[in-house]
Length: 118
Length: 115
Image 1 (tube, helix red, strand yellow):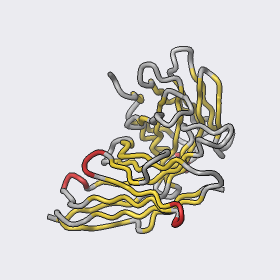
Image 2 (spheres, chains in turn blue, purple; image 1 turned 120 degrees about the vertical axis):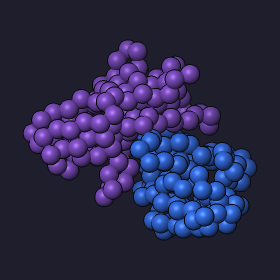
Image 3 (cartoon, helix red, strand yellow; image 1 turned 135 degrees about the horizontal axis):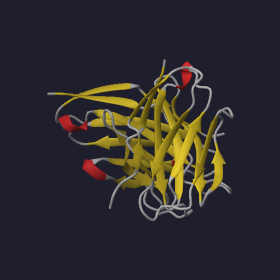
Image 4 (tube, chains in turn red, blue; image 1 turned 60 degrees about the vertical axis):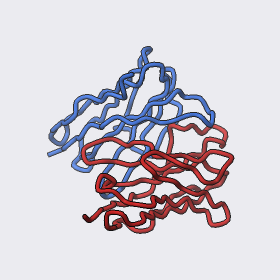
């Protein structure tokens, strides 16, 4: 079975502070991992993804995430938060390597709402 | 290049009615997936279509159905609407190839309210 757990449904930081959003997964096969961001009344935008190779992945808007197989984690970080980062963030898993699976089917975590205080 | 387009943006229906939502994928994309987003259940996969064929299906009742046309545009239909069907329905498109370069692009969604 595959699942995604995002620790903390709400995270608040001050502008300029470190952002850390946690994601742990369970998967029957080596997963592909994703972080998406959703702004109010909008769809999901891909921040970054891990498929193979380097375990530290850099994404858009200064975000990065590190795949740690031993910890089954894929935490999202940003060194300095900006007001425009306030949004909901979703971690997702794809079993693309699994026979019969496709990228179209993602398993999402419940999301973390990030608030940035001035 | 235009993004994924979903219509309508908002929809209000009453219980027992049926509804059809439309999704136009990014040009060249052959895979279209549908997701339901609710505060209680989060994001849940409905189904995926590729080249007019349903390739994958989530755990939803038969009232939820979909189809894809030869131009890759997709529609999803919900019959006999229930209050619990109120949700944001998101469509996503991709090339549909199982490669590491694949990316999933989402539309802005259709907000369905069932009264």
